[in-house]
Image 1 (cartoon, rainbow, N blue to C red):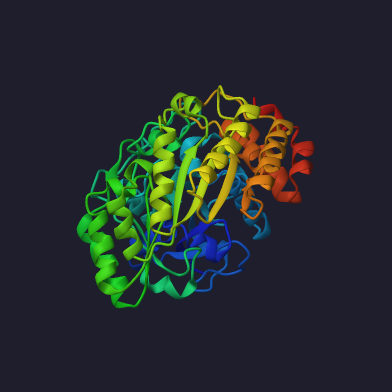
Image 2: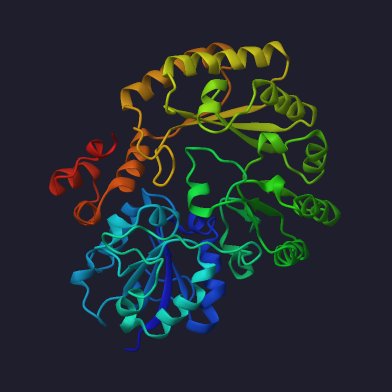
Length: 455
C-alpha cells in the first residue's frame, strides 16, 4: 500500500486544536501539493481522508504548550508508533517532525523521539518543508543541512518570518468544525512583542513586533463577513497594528462582531474603546501580571496604578466585562504582600466606584528558556496554595460573586520541567508516560522527578 505523504497532528481534541492557527496554515500550505491531512487526539482516523496515523509517510507535530508533550507521546503509543526514533524503521513508520513554541524554546527533550525538531516560524521553512515532503526517506539527511533544526549539543537557532510575509487565518473549509472562539474566523495580525517583559518568551522567540500582511488579512476578514461569520483577532499587541482600527471599522460596516485575545492597557484609550464597543466587543482582557507597582517595574512591565484605574474607568463607561490576568511567584516578589495588594486594589476599585463585571485568572510564574528570568525558580506548591488562600479570603469578603480561576501548579511544574530536560531525560520520561499514562508512574519508572527540575 502506498503511504499518504503527510499529516499534521496538534495533540488535543479537534475543537481545541482548530483554535490554534497552525493546523490551518499547514492545511493551506500543503493540502493541494502533498495531500496533507489533519490528526487529532482521541480520533482513530484523519479528518479528511480517514486514514490511520501509521499510514502517513510524515507526521508534523505542533507543540505549543509543554504539557501537550504528554498527549503527543500517548498518541504515538496508542496508535502503535514507537516513541523513540531509533525504534522506528524507515518505511514502516512515519517520520516525525516537531515544531511549535514549546519545541522551539527547548527542543532537547524531543531529540531522541522526533526525526527532526524545527525551531521557529513555519513560513520561512516552506521551501525546506517542501523538500522534506518530496523525499521522506531522506529526511534525516536533509535535516542535517537545516540551520534551524535542533542538533544535539548545539545552540538552538530560531528562524523568524519577516513583517508582512505571514498572514494566517482559519481555513474556510474547517469552519463547520468549530473552535474555542465560538466558531469565529480567527486572524493572527501580529507576532513578536512591542513590550520587553523579562518573563515572556514571546520576545525571545518572535523578536520585535511584526505585522501580518495587511492585504491578505483584510481579504480573509472580508471573506468571513461575506460568509456571515464574525472574527477573532490574535496577537500580543493588537492595538499597535497599523490596520487594527480599520479591521474594526470593516466589521462594524458589515454588521459583524469582533473578539480579541487581549488589550494592552497602554493602548486601551477612550477612543479605541468606543470603536471596540461598536464592533461588538463585550469583554476585554487586561494582564498587569501583578498588583504591586514595584513588581511590575522589576519584571519589565512598568505600569502605574493610575493607568490600571484609568483602564477600569474606560471599561465601566463602555460597559465592558473585564478578565484580569495575574501571575503568582514573580521573581523578587513576596506572596503575602502580593495577596495584600490584590485585596487593596479591589478595595480601592470599589471605593472609586469602578467595579465592572470582573473575572480573575491567576497562574504560577514559569521561568522560560531564553528570557532574563530563565534561571529563576517556580514557586513551591505550598507557597502557591498560601497565596491562593490569602487572596480568596479577601476576595470572598469584597467580591464574593467574582469568578476566579487558579491555574494548575502541576501544569506549571510540567512546563518548567520540560523546558529544562535534556534529550535522555525527555526520552525516558515520555516513553514511561506513554506506556502508562500516569505522571507519578512515569517519574518512578524513568527515575526523573519533575520537582528536581523546577529549581
